[in-house]
Length: 170
Image 1 (cartoon, rainbow, N blue to C red):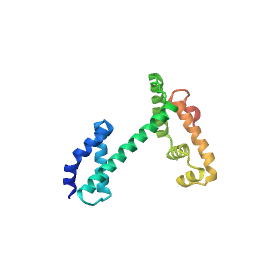
Image 2 (image 1 turned 30 degrees about the vertical axis):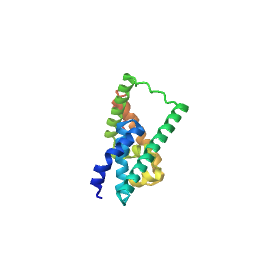
Image 3 (image 1 turned 60 degrees about the horizontal axis):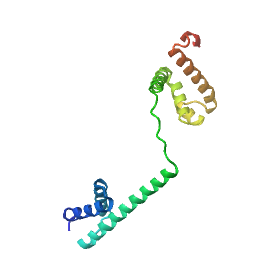
Image 4 (image 1 turned 120 degrees about the vertical axis):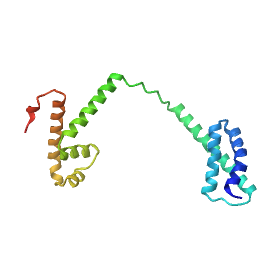
């Protein structure tokens, strides 16, 4: 029997079976569809009664697995309840967004090598990996990184108007 004919014939009873087991139409539909997906994926062959039995057995196992996962999640939440996170303070959120924008502006204004040094270090690259990327000896990365950090800090303060940009020309 071709798969479309099998689907047309067996999906409605399989769906009703899953609905009775779960009590949830969406879950029943998902489980019934997944059973058919596995039938096709695993290229299960045989007479219609054997395929029907296979589909119902797979659907039963899928429902049982969903229930088991759901019960495990419920037990874990009872033991380790998750407290709802308070909504972020609007003022703090605004300040954070402004700081992020300032950092991006300052980074964009730095020489490419400084920007690469800072960003790679922030992402956890080793001095050797950074040196390979920018084409210098690994022994010079510490000095280059310290200079890049100082230029970033100076530019960040200047961008905020905290100091005169001419103060750190070197």
